[in-house]
Length: 64
Image (cartoon, rainbow, N blue to C red):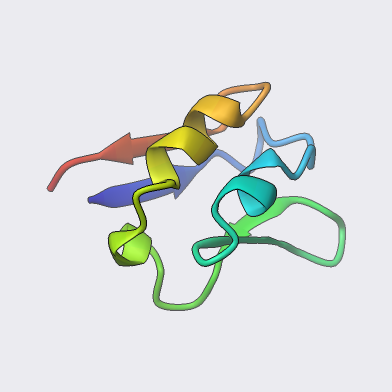
């Protein structure tokens, strides 16, 4: 799995960090970012749900 965050689209709603806190966090400005070493989703079943929860579709999840 590969997770990408379009930082130009992200509005900092925080739904990803609330849905999958083991994978996503928010930076100092409130925008989404992946926790270090979590670009592969770390096996979290909530990653796809976090992507769906994003109100601006800034998160994409692809299978490698």
